[in-house]
Image 1: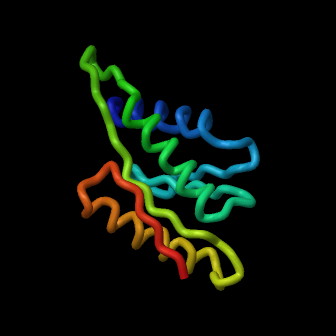
Image 2: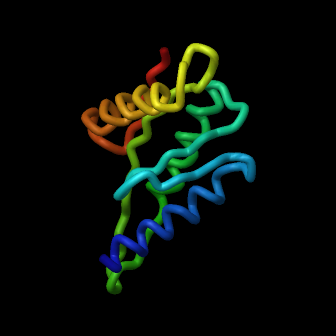
Image 3: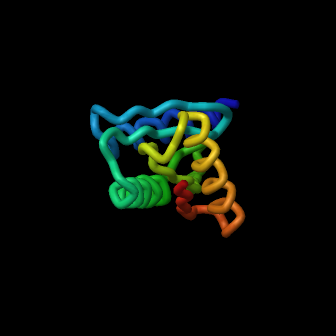
Length: 113
């Protein structure tokens, strides 16, 4: 899927521009990415997520000569002493992502333990 590859590559570049060198970006499947913000609380998470969401929303991708806009839905959680494992943290973020998608897409949602 060349069109999908163009969007995924552009998306990855936009993420790198929005994040700090210490933050970690991982593609975890299909069109799904995980971002680990180092030393960030829920407020920083919300600010970064909103910044990422807006930058993606504004970006125009050119696919076969056509302008294409994409949006993202983002689920957030905070990995702190209340979370027992990365798997548990992922579960919370994934549920928040599901809610963001069902609320109409291009949304952000957060779930904390």
